[in-house]
Length: 245
Image 1 (cartoon, rainbow, N blue to C red):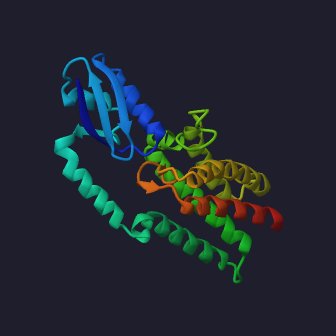
Image 2: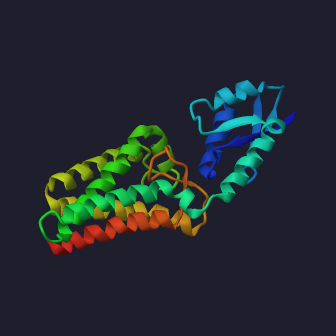
């Protein structure tokens, strides 16, 4: 017998593989086919399986929510309509606010010496960027690592890289605050952000609809040119600081 269910929270082929794998671990499940665009799972089973049992199979990943099609259909349609109505500013409001606050602090620090010090302003901006973004990643480290592995070229092959990356951002933020070994700090920043932007560019150019992991798993931000600008800005600033040294 076959049944159709609604599943929310899936954003890419990696999600399809993960959900299929988890559902197939149930002995009575013979096959699972998932339609990402429709957000539907077609499950073939040897005998009827309670919906609660299927939901339990996904409990370790709360972002994937399975429900009976006739129950959740109206809710899913409503959520999709609401999401489509969001403006660019409503979608990226968290990032806009974060950058605005960091920029304001950086400008204040740059003028603190009686004249505008570009190096100080950029150093404080980089410190604020890495410390803030690492903070959001730390709120749900496992969720960030899972999201990051869906598009980052290193994390796709080395799953632990997502965890390391979050702590690396924290270390870079502290290094910029303390002005610790500025040349080495900027070299590491340049390398890390250059590697990071490769996966972002691939995802955006291939028009993959996946969640951006820049703010961890706290905010559901879509991968877009905003992410490219964000990473690109860090690369340009690290290069500029290296040239000014």
